[in-house]
Image 1 (tube, helix red, strand yellow):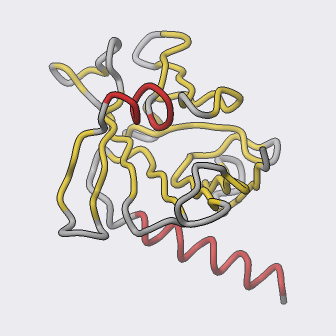
Image 2 (image 1 turned 180 degrees about the vertical axis):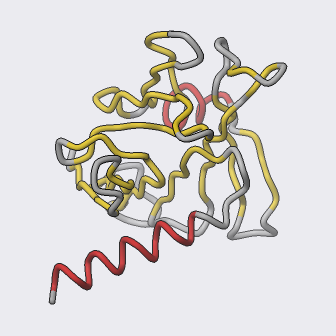
Amino acid sequence: MRQFLLSLFLFLSLNLQAADPAGRLFRFERSTNRNYICYDIQLADGHLDMKHPIHVYWIRAEEDGRQQELNYLQRKLAFGYKVISRGNEEVTVHLTAYKDLPIRICRRDGRWVALVTINGQEAELSKMFAQMRSPNSLHVEYVDIFGLSRATHTPIRQRITP
């Protein structure tokens, strides 16, 4: 029963993601408020922009829902990314704040996806959630990574503790 409830929760969480705009690779949420960071595919002339493949920005849901670009410190120290390899219409990146999770941006089944390894399985990344130690803290207690298994097409989750 517990496994069923966990699967149902993950399924509903992923389905809520489906309401995100086309081109959304994944989002990053924090426990501090309802604002979240979007990671969207960035194309140039219909092809992956190999120099800047991801557009990263805030959705200020806590305020008026507006889109806001990251500032320099947010981009360089926390929510930005670095391209670590380039291929034919695909790139691998890692997030500035967590270099141990390579994220491969590529086309699968006619759409752009962010592929990661979750619990040893290749998965389409949909969301990351950081539980902060306190509302005003910069210290992370844990990060949950949510995705959809490419092999089983079922929701999966992994918790990372720093």
